[in-house]
Each structure stands twice: as structure tokens, then as C-alpha cells.
Image: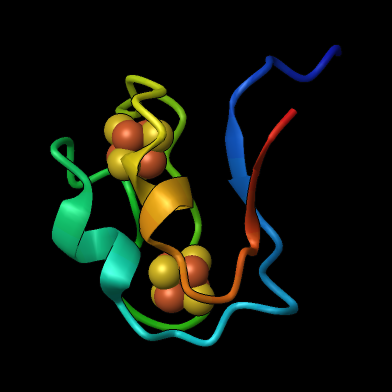
Amino acid sequence: MAEEHGYYVDEDRCLMCGQCNLVCPQHALKAFGPRHIDQSKCIQCGQCQAACPAGVIDYR
Ligand code: SF4
Ligand code: SF4
């Protein structure tokens, strides 16, 4: 099955700082541990990518 385009966290490099959780209007990111985006909630606004200090959120 083809993966849909969207925002994804490189979970191996996530600092678990929570900045993405603070800016996401959809509460689409898991709130603990290495972050993961629930694609069914994400509206692809890009705010998490802009806020991530580690640059580990990419659109692909
Ligand atoms: S792209 Fe927007 S809606 Fe999707 S996880 Fe990031 S902040 Fe939330
Ligand atoms: S802002 Fe980036 S480093 Fe911080 S928890 Fe979210 S994905 Fe991980």
C-alpha cells in the first residue's frame, strides 16, 4: 500500500521536547515518548515542522 504524503517525525532523532504538541491545532501528535503524528487528525499545516528545534519533522 502506498504511503500518503504528509508530515512525519524521525522518531529515532526526536528529543521529546514537546514543542510540536504545543503548536499543533489538531492535537495530532502523540504526547509522550518519541513523537508520532496521527495522519487521520493532521491537517498538514506545517506548524510542528516550524516549531521543532531538532528539525526532525519532514514533509514527504
Ligand atoms: S502539520 Fe499541523 S496538524 Fe499536522 S501534526 Fe503538524 S502541527 Fe499538527
Ligand atoms: S518538537 Fe521535534 S524534537 Fe520536540 S518532541 Fe516534537 S518532533 Fe520531537
